[in-house]
Amino acid sequence: MTPRIIFRNKEHEVKQGMTVRKALQKLDIDPDSVLITRNGELITDDEIIQDDEVIKLVPVISGGG
Image 1 (tube, rainbow, N blue to C red):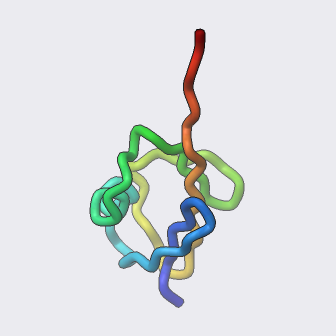
Image 2: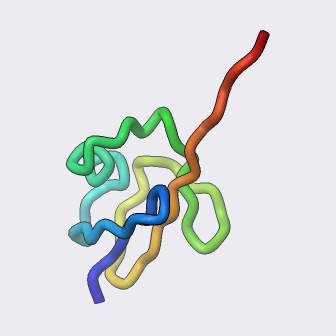
């Protein structure tokens, strides 16, 4: 099965063997604007995407007064 990245309730199929950072660049998502999780665990953007994986992205929210 093809690996997928889920961001804002949309699924994007990606190629296995590439880094998460490269996949995010292809999807036009800034890696510094999201937290990257796999199986509920935080991972870094230099991780290699494996077959059948589901990677979920959580937007980083900042703000202040």
